[in-house]
Length: 374
Image (cartoon, rainbow, N blue to C red; front, top):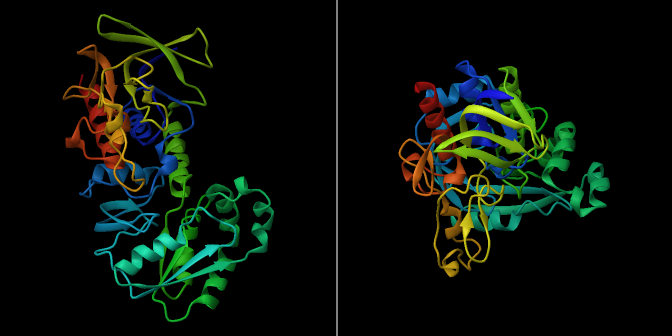
């Protein structure tokens, strides 16, 4: 098989690059293992501090609605982080104190929503909090197995039960001006979060949960549909196992599912993510990139790889493959002519592109533009 560009990785960076190239008339393929950082997506595009019309249009055409409002967003652990662009149902507040009194509502038996952490974080900002649990009979079958009481399983039920949840919340509501609910609405029907908000006589904030992320999965689904509608080839549940590189040029890659059938392309983009999606791999002696053997920036002293405090910044999250100023991947100190790198597999090696989701989008667009200009 031969394509103009092959994208290795179907996360946020891979989808943005694929959609951009397909819109420009290229024939592309995305090879995706099915597991990526969007499963952890908070719904906020951190480090994107401007309302870039190009980004908003790309997501809007896929049915992903965004809103722009510089400020802070609330993390699942009750902390606040700067942001400006987020999904429509994820709030950005001017200041961390966005209300006077808050009612935090969880579902009985659901342990992936940290009510106590949220209450503690909001109370530090001067808000008074009350935590209550809803006992919904429709969730009892899920409670029989702890593995079923997860965000995605609950979300499949919530889109059908949102009106009942609203009624229960209205009964619980006293003099609170804010209601916090788990971010488990709108997986199959993106209009549900808006309906919930308009039906409760208080400000409704959908707070993040332990992954998998419902807004993230919804975003994956919509971006994938848009990419395929544009004619892109999406190879789901497959992974690249080896590559054929000669004299600084990548000629083809082979995948687990296609066995010995190589996939050729004029250009390749590596969007395999960080440690979670195995874009980077470690052993007791080193951190390495497993497909091409690219050069990686990391601390040689293993004791400096992590911070013992769970809630503190973890150094290993900043490790990444090396790339030149145009994001050509570097192998043995030399840039590969037609292999580009985008997304979190870069770590913090190119801080000029920002961090997290913002970096994924910026690097993907930069790489796509580089390919189209050459």
